[in-house]
Length: 244
Image 1: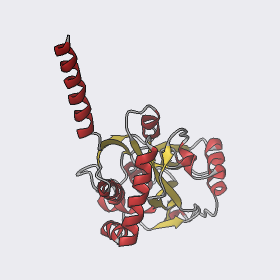
Image 2 (image 1 turned 180 degrees about the horizontal axis):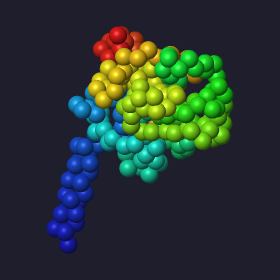
Image 3 (image 1 turned 180 degrees about the vertical axis):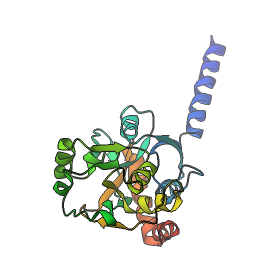
């Protein structure tokens, strides 16, 4: 009986030690097609590096799990991952812990200059064909969401390189996406002529995004490390590596 008790103690000790050994490696949900913020090939990108380096300052590592945008918050809600980006309070998640803002996106409406379209507000797009990033209606305000709901030619797509193809082939009037993502995919696209002039309609406020955590403790550690990155100048160095 004593021998069995000792063996059980040994088993629980080994199990506990093993769990602690790997406790600092967290699975992180990441949206597909977010270059230059997240580049799946090589697990790089400015947002990925900021999050990775901040957590590394606290002794943590992350394993990215790439998902369609709509699945990112759901994976955190289902607790299949420990943290998720890119999210904020508009993601529809409760009972999780949001970090301080770690990255800012500047979403814009983009049209071909030759079409001479004027867009000063979301309502100006009500009769246009639009292809936006997935879940755009959650993040771009109530006026935008209302316009999208009433517009039969409104679509959203998770693969944002498709937005470039659709715009420059004149298959949609407008694409709605982050300006840096647009520049990145425009430079890589070889399927259509992307040299055509475009008009950038800056009708949206900057979007402050955060990391969602299941653990309040790890969230607090991340916030502290993020502040360190910014104070040291390392944060700006990472950004400048991807945006000129």
